[in-house]
Image (tube, rainbow, N blue to C red; front, side):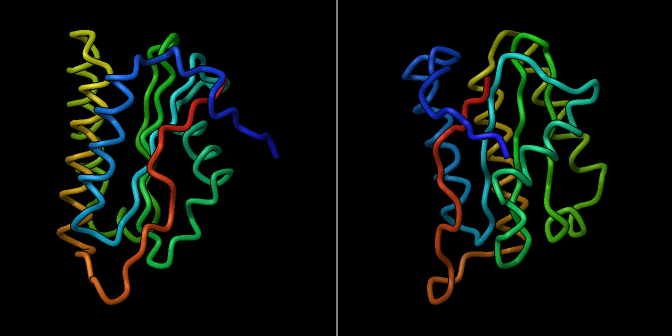
Length: 153
């Protein structure tokens, strides 16, 4: 298993962009039991970004959430690739068309060079879907996964 560096590539985003994305993650998770993570790296090792997103999802053990309702937003900045990988609990509730629309909207932001804003907006939309299908329960819910951005190589 590869260990991910938490600090090595922070230069991919400035501090303001980092705060914007982390704030979006926390906002998205505030009203849901679901979890959202963001993984950013320079280059994608796979031809298809969804394959890399799946690899990252499982290496971060995101499938271990109690309700299988975690979502990974994957971005390879230099290769201009991205993917959203949803665990089976939330994927079954929303269907493929929903995820295609989320990716399309993120691409539109990226085409305007709004990378951090595009990721943050995507995360907020994912949070809305999670809230609809997995609402927050103050008696049982806990933050199962860290909220910070994960930077790959």
